[in-house]
Image (tube, rainbow, N blue to C red; front, side, top):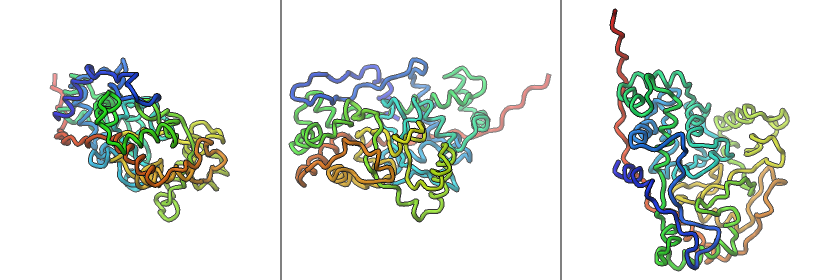
Length: 374
C-alpha cells in the first residue's frame, strides 16, 4: 500500500523528461506522468476503492474472476502463458497484456477496441470469455457490501453503487501502476551510468541498424499503429477443443463472413474492427516497457523469450495466414549473435524492479438493512 500511496501522491510532481538530452537518440524519451482525464480525477479515496475492486471477484459473472485473475502482479501484471485465462468453461483467445503503463495508451486491447481505461475495464468485466458479468447483477452485489456502499457514497455521491463509477475507480487505480524509473529512463534523463556498455550498444542497434524505433518509439516505445509482422497462429487451436470453440465463437461474434468463419485458422486482428481485408492479421504495436516480466510475447504468446523475439525479427519475421498483409518494414536485419545479445540487454533496461504490492483486504457481503416501518 505504501507503493501505491507514494505513486498516487507523486503523480502531480513527476517531472517530464528533458527533450534534448545530450547524445540521446531522437525519437525516444523518458516516461513522464500519465495523462489523467478531466472527467476522472485522481484522489486517494478513489484509488483505494479501485484497488479493492481490481482484486475483488465481485465484478464478474460468477463472482470468481477479478481483474487480477488475468493481470497477476507476480506474472508481470499479465499471465505468463500463451493465451490468457477465460471464464470457467472457456479459455481466452489472445495473450494477456500487462496493465503496467497502460495509463499511457490511447488504444487498449490488441486491436485498439477501447479508447480509455474506463471503457477497457467495462469490456473486460462484461466480456463473454473473460468476466461475463451483467451490470445490474454486479451493482446488486456491490450494494450488499457495506464498505462499498460507503465508499461509493463518499467518492462518487452514490446512494446505490453505480457500475460506471466502479470502472472509473478501477481505471484510476490502474493509472498508479506505472514505472518511470527504469535504467533506460534514468539514462534518458541524463545518467550516463544507468546503462552498461552492452545496453548502450543495444540502444544504438535499436535506433539504428535493427530499425526497432520505426514502430517502437516515443516515451511509451509504441507508435500505437497496426502491423502484420508474420506471427504464426496460436498452436493451441490445433489440439485444444476449448480453444477451438472459443476461437470459432469470436469469429462468429465479431462479424466474420460465412467463408471466413469456415476457413480461417488464424486471428484476423484489426479486421474485426474495420472489416477491411488489408487489416487482416494486424495488431497494435505493444510497448516494450516492463517486458522483462511479461513473457511470452506477441498477441498469441508464440514467442517465449526476448531472445526469441529478437531472433524472429532478425530473420525478417514469420509467415501466417494473412501473408499478403505483412508489413514491408519487416525485413531480415543481418544482426550477428553478439549484436542480438546486446539488443536483448537493451530491451531488459526498459524494465525496472518488479511492482509487487500486497493485495488489499477485501470486504465481505452482508444483508441489506431493512427499511424502517412507518
